[in-house]
Length: 97
Image (cartoon, rainbow, N blue to C red; front, side, top):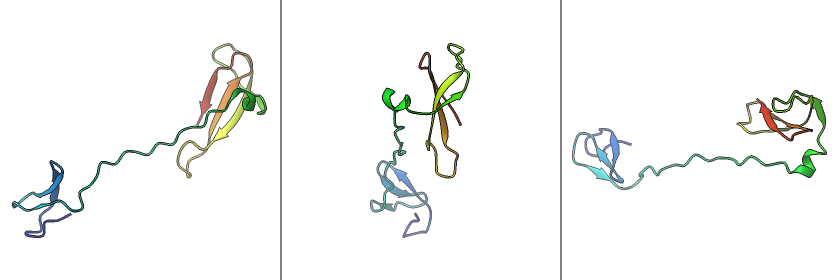
């Protein structure tokens, strides 16, 4: 945003927009603090996990070679899905991007 008096850049200062060159201030169009929108990752409950397919994947916790697997879109749409694994023996959960 620019100053209506002199055309200089307006900068936020104590809740208002203030000119960097003259004494002009503007309350309209103040940039509000934006909080980053976060998407909650859905937790898959025990009953749902046990119906998921199993694959060969080594668990780093117990060494078991079988894990339930499922995929979720955890990042933006142009990124690949995140693959989740849950050990069939110790229920340790990990993911692969």
